[in-house]
Length: 293
Image (cartoon, rainbow, N blue to C red; front, side, top):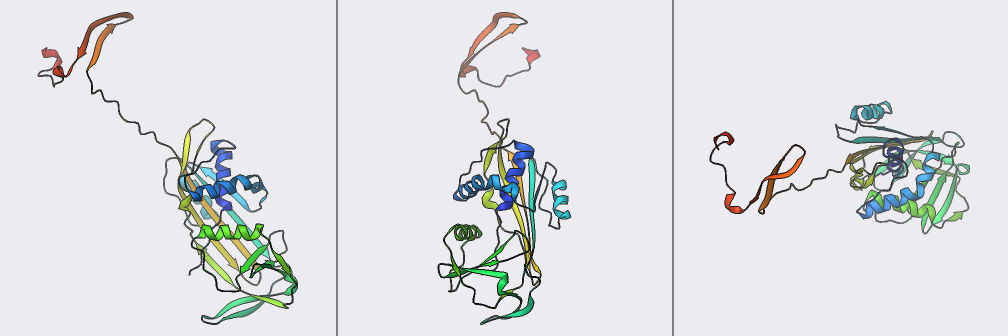
């Protein structure tokens, strides 16, 4: 299975940004799928905490070029094409350094795939926990940010989707864990470098109303997820873009298909002039022009 990635912090921050800058604060968002329900439930729980997450920034604009420039200035690919509505970008950038300085460069030997570049951290630089039969490893850093690694001890079925993976991570973090006395002198970790564009189209269709009761919906959702980890530390950069458009009211045209009455009036005189009832027998194309009659 190939590497997969998904961030839900930036989509939630994008919703918060478009609320604050365009739609009006504290909008009610509605969804029609299980994925919508999961994201919106998480948003309702985490919304008040988003402002405390360092490294988050957002921009809202009706101009796709402004948003693409914002992305490119932050070393992301442009996401947006011309749209009719409002666009929003949320970016998170987290840079961490290992608590006790750079690790030692090493190699990670695998049974079937050969050797890979890695690095080694001392025992004082990490903590270990049991989560069921699996290891949960907490990598200590010089900042308040922490990198967690969840390592299955036995072969497990890979996640069927990126969203399942995120839900698993949430369950691990809020679930029960048992601390392990660290008897390992070091930990060796593979170096990592990837740049992915996760499919977050499951967000499309979420709807809300702005402060003027105008209905809006997410027409397009995009994400770019970049991560690097080496002996120095790790860096996470994610950008999420959303395009919101107004709901179009496609009303049926009014068609008169039954006999009807009619008349004229003149000026402010309310006297009906030439009242008629047009039955089917007179429904036909006139034989001449109006001046010929």
